[in-house]
Image 1: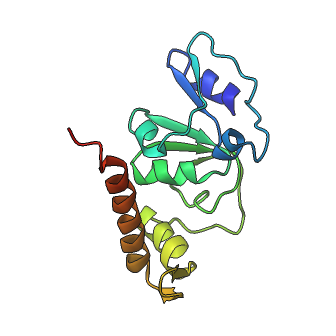
Image 2: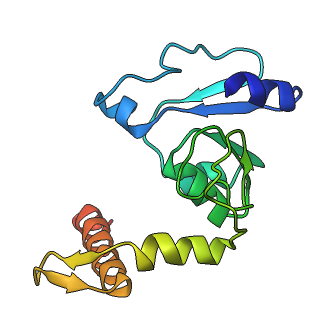
Length: 155
């Protein structure tokens, strides 16, 4: 995958982002021992994926969610594995899935993955909920987190 990215973008800076599981020590990483050189840089710190995606033109992935996030940000995505979002006409695919014969829009793939096939639970009420309720809950947690970090820090 890296060789293809280098060959297809010879005069471009290339960022290799370490998978979160590798950063946390849950599993080893293929590019774990890659050293920064020439136009290749490694990103080994935990970072919000969107903050990286905003600064690139193309994303090369195997199967990670990072590729779908890049699609939602309007980026060109090259896929070397078979994630749920590949082979629908949205990505540059290095493998073929013969079952995926239709072309899908990004909105259709999102709906199928996040609405049709997913189930959400509100942990406070311990009951099933809609995606909007789950998002509201996550936004509430985010606000509580940032409020707790800024309380007592005001000058």
